[in-house]
Length: 464
Ligand SMILES: [Zn+2]
Image (cartoon, rainbow, N blue to C red; front, top):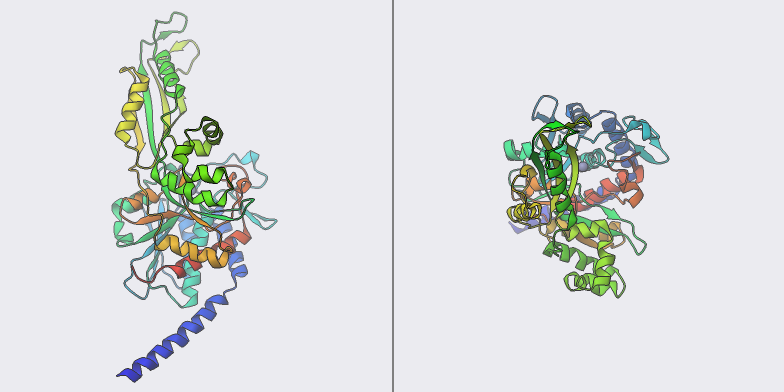
C-alpha cells in the first residue's frame, strides 16, 4: 500500500510544480489590458444611483465570466437592481472567501469633466470614467482574478465567491444588505470577505499597504422643529427656523470628546515604526501624546486624523421655507454623524440631545448600523503580508481604521471577517477623483491589481 501512495505523492508534486510554473507564466500585462477593456465596458453602462439600474452592468460581467466557462447568476432585489453572483469551487471543504464590489456609481457633474464620464475612454495609460475606482475598477479586477484562477486550472482549496452588488452608494439595502438579509445562503460559511475601503499608499518614505479592519459607523439623523407659520414681516419671538438654528449652533459649537479607541491606537502603533522620533514615540502611545497641547493641535489639524479620534457631527441638508417672506411651520436639518468603532449609539444620542438642550427639537433617526470590526491579524491579513513580501518589496502591511464606511458591515454582522483592501497603488491625486472629476485608474494598476489579488488568494491558508 505504501508504494502506490508514494507514486501518487510524486505525481501530485509534479502537477503542483507544473501548475506553479503555469501560474508564473500568466501574462499579467495582457491581463491588465483585458481588465481595462472589461472596465471600459462596465463604465459605459450608466449605473448612476439613483436609480442604479445595475442589471445591464452585471450582464457585462456575466458575459466575461461565461467566456471562462463560469456560469454567473444575476439576482435582482427589485426590477433593474441586479446583483451578480458566481462561485469558483475549491478542492476542499475549507471555508470560502467572498470578493465583493458594487456596480452603482454616484452622479457626475459632466460639464466639469475633460472626458465623457460614461465613455470608458483610455488615455495616457488610464481608463477614465465614473466608477473607474469606486468601484467598477474593483469589480473588474476581482472578476478577472476569478477568470485567471479558472484559466489556471488550479482552483484554491476554498471556494471563491464573487459578488458584484447594487446600491452601495445609497446604503446597500438594494445590494449587499439585501443579499445579507434575503440570500445569506450565497455566502454561508464564508470565512473572509474582501471589498473596497483601503489600498496601497505610495509615501515619501516607502510604500505602505493598508487593510481596512474597522470603519466609523454612520448615525444619520434629522433634527425637526415646529412653530407658528406666518408672514415674515411680523415674526413671533420663536419660529421653527430660529429654534433649529439655535440647536445647530449648539451642536457645532463643541466637538465631542477626544477618544483613542483600541483599533485606532493599534493602527497608529503600526504606523509608528515607519516614522522618525519624536513622532515615532508619540504615535506608539497616542493616548498619552495627545495630552501634550502642542502635539494635539498639530495632530488634530489633519481632518482625517481628527475624525479618527472623535465622533463627528456634520450638518448637511437644510430645509425651511421656500420663500423669503414666509415663516414655515416646520424646519429641519440632516446631520451626518459618524461614530468611532465600538461607540454606543444610545450614549451618542443622549449626548446629542443634551447638547441641543431643547426637548422641542425632535431627533429622528435616518440611518444607523451596528459598529463592527474584523481581526487585525488573521489568515487574510497574513496572506496580504505574503503578497507584499514578493510583490511590493516587503512594504509594511497595516490594519487601518477608515473614516468612511463600505458594505463590509453587512457581512461582519453575519460573522464573516471582512476587509477593505483594493490592490491598487493610489496617490492622493488619484484618490481625490473618487466621487470627483475625471475619475480614473491606470492600466498598470489593473494588471498589477489582478496579480496581487491572485497572489493574496494563493497565499491564504488552505484550511481554516
Ligand atoms: Zn464605493
